[in-house]
Image 1 (cartoon, rainbow, N blue to C red):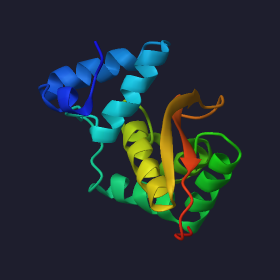
Image 2 (image 1 turned 60 degrees about the horizontal axis):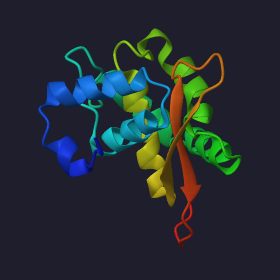
Image 3 (image 1 turned 120 degrees about the vertical axis):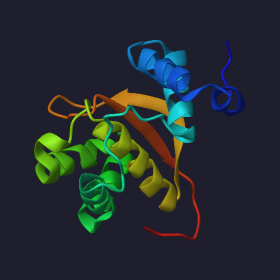
Image 4 (image 1 turned 135 degrees about the vertical axis):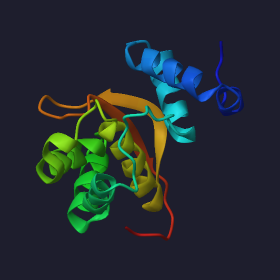
Length: 152
């Protein structure tokens, strides 16, 4: 099946979540494209997921949108790597055990990093790449720069 944002938005949240979780387990290119599409519309949260308006979520946002976070994300993107590669170590240091995939902190971090990159005139190219060993997140979106007058 060819998934579109419209088809995905029509699914019940639990079905969309299952689709996302299954795609994350797959190595197929079409699964990676589906992951990106679902992340663009918003991954349905698990009941145990970290909320962005929680103290941990706010701290995560502060780290990602800090000058250090912005610089780390942009450096990775300029080098052709996922911006999350620069952010992940900062989140590990700032959040400790609260930064983990079980509470969906890695998904939320990916969402925030994508927002940061869009603010800086970068867009996802629909591809994902593995993150290096030692990162809590395992894969992340790649971005390309869209020239504009906006500087980050």
